[in-house]
Amino acid sequence: MHDCGTKFNYTINSLCFANKAFDPEMQKTIFCHFDFLKSLEVDSVTIANPLVMLFAKENFDFKICASVVLDIMSLGQVKFYESLGASRIILSKNLNKNYKKVKEICENTESKIHLIVNDPCLQQCPLKSYHNLTTSFSSMKTNDSKNYFSFCTLMCRKRMLENPEEIAKSSWIRPEDLNIYRKAGVDSFKLVDRKESTPWIKRAIKAYSSEKYDGNLANLCSYFSPVKGNGEKENNALILMRDSDATFSCFEQNKNNLRFKPFIDNKKLGKYSKAMIFTDCEQKNCFDCGLCKEAAENAISIETTEKEKVIHNISLVSKKLSSTEFWVH
Image 1 (cartoon, rainbow, N blue to C red):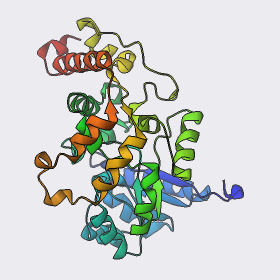
Image 2: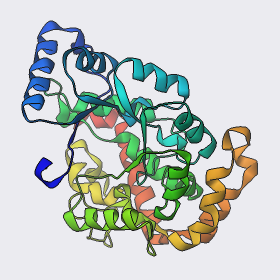
Image 3: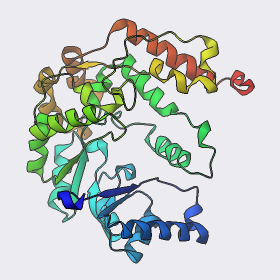
Image 4: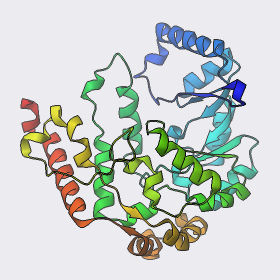
């Protein structure tokens, strides 16, 4: 990659190691892994765990990037992670539509500021901390990761389906609006998702590098992809799940029955997106504003049958998970 003039960033951004980061044997493992990355000439490392970040600062010369998982939302938090060695900061997705705060941070730090642009999480997501911890634990070899299921994602999808204005509120940034953030001082923009197909990734890169996209914004957001690794496949054949299909052993094979793709008219959304960016939402009552609700009504649509099926399926699974009937499976 260096021969192509490209730098490489390695991600180690589990928020928590179930307190094993305090264990000398685990620290030795971490050191050996960092040493291996150094031998590969990795340029930078994205980290979420503060102890691991300090460990990297004290023992290696990587450039350190503070992960979005840290949910950094203030200048004070930026300064804290700078003291642990971070010179690149990925801000919380909650700031994606808060121009005033982003500009304030950019003007008062020498760190490189990054934003994730195509990962539409719920605004002020009430499940964020829990979600980040469960995914962190699920990635550990010592844990029984096969028992992990993204309950949080299900709850988010159900909320968006039942209240489409939540899609409008969520943390996307249109390709056409990147220049606004660049003027605020944002250094670069991060695209997800590396798990998607090559054509999907190329489409997202083209849209955001050209800062123009005339289609469905959902096509640039992996969150709405029916099948990971095959983002071109449309999910037109959702099947109502039978009660027996809602058991834990069937969750994986039924993932497509728990997903939906809205149509987000990127052109029509442009009428509202700049207003969203410059509206000081922290100082307003979201329920009285109505901007995102109007955007959803005019620029976002969800096929009715698909909506009904997925809501039914998610409700069935969540009921199964919270029921004593789940134990017998």
